[in-house]
Amino acid sequence: MGRNRIFLPQEDLDRWIREEKVSVSGDALTIHAEQRTYDMMPAVRFMKDVAETGDPFGLLGRVKEKRQLDEMGAEHYMGSVVMGESAYDVQDGFVGYPRAASGSDIDAAVGAAAGEEQISDEALLTKFLLEKL
Image 1 (cartoon, rainbow, N blue to C red):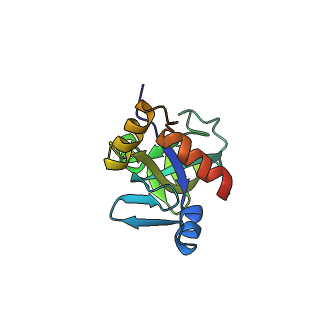
Image 2 (image 1 turned 120 degrees about the vertical axis):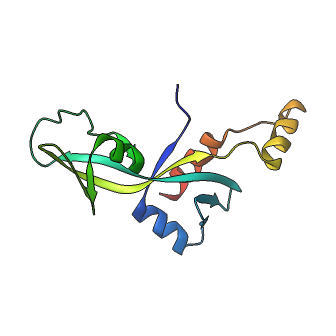
């Protein structure tokens, strides 16, 4: 099984930055309310097969990082991806991977051992997104 990840559309990320709900430093995104940090990679979500080729690559609804697009030989430009004879509308954004254990994560683990409830990074991010969207 792969690493846990979440797709963050560019327009949502821009809004959260303006509202000062998150901050970005280099390739790291920090959610202020939760004090959680995620490593970010440029990515796209495949939304529509505009060439009507029947999605021969099975990409609709999937998320691919930019490096994966490069490896597949796809051309990405401003909301679209072309692969062979297929063309797709895509949603630009980022994939976020939870950062490895930090001091606060260790504190949470200690709290869990003491009988306090522990919440995973993924659960916290999901909660944040559901409350803020």
